[in-house]
Image (cartoon, rainbow, N blue to C red; front, top):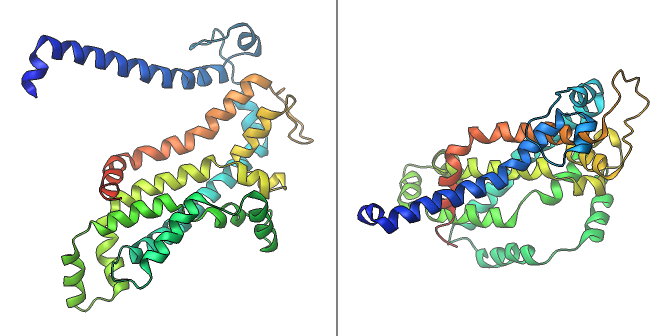
Amino acid sequence: MHKLHNTKAGRVFDVFNYLLLLLVGLVTFLPFLYVIAGSFATETELASRPFFLIPKEITLNAYEYIFSTPTFIRSIGVSVLITVVGTIFSLILTLTMAYPLSQKHLLGRNVLLNLVVFTMVFNGGMIPTYVVVKNLQLLDSIWALILPVAINPFNLIIIKSFFENMPTELEEAAKIDGCSDVSVFWRIVLPLSKPVIATFTLFYAVFYWNDYFNALLYISDSAKWPIQLLLQQIMMVANVDFGDLDMLVEPPEESLKLAVVVVASLPIMCFYPFLQKHFAKGVMLGSVKG
């Protein structure tokens, strides 16, 4: 393999590969840079320049407006609460369901697995789900955004496959020492599952943070809107009305939209580096077996 890269054809291929990857990286990264630059630009510049990476005149009006009204801060707080509670709740349910399903001696295991796969293809639909949430009196509650989507079937199957790949000798040795199934799961399995736990912590956190559609269906109280639903409302309406607030800053419409995107994206982006070292390893370990 090393000799192939030292040939002329190999070097040409490497250069082409690097250029292609650089182009793909720029295509995905430049729009986000434009959003950041546009959030600091004036309304006149946004209307006159279709694309730029450095604004001619830097203004903080959009950010001053965001942090001068409690609406944005409250929505970010709601999103943080939903993300933290939902991620912890989903991980607990997913892990505790995936581990028993990974045990081949479990009675009715195939039936349960088939039911899990069935939910990946079929579901009750929007209206029946709404009726269930309403009858459970979960409307205008954060639990309406957590309980209906608490377990992702795909994530469950990947974690189950990860547990199946763990050496059975460890569990057998722990049981010989007197550990129960719960003790084996808590003391042996979970400490060895940090990569996959970190990976799906990120998956669940990103899902809960980005979800706006469930909030649109189940949350009618604007005081309980998560940041993504607030952002969606800002994008949908031309004139943004955040209530009867005595504002010192006139809200800039276009730059405000871009600034909200930046503010809504930063928390989850700051969360990613802490789990990045486990991310690729966790995905590969959980994907060895289907």
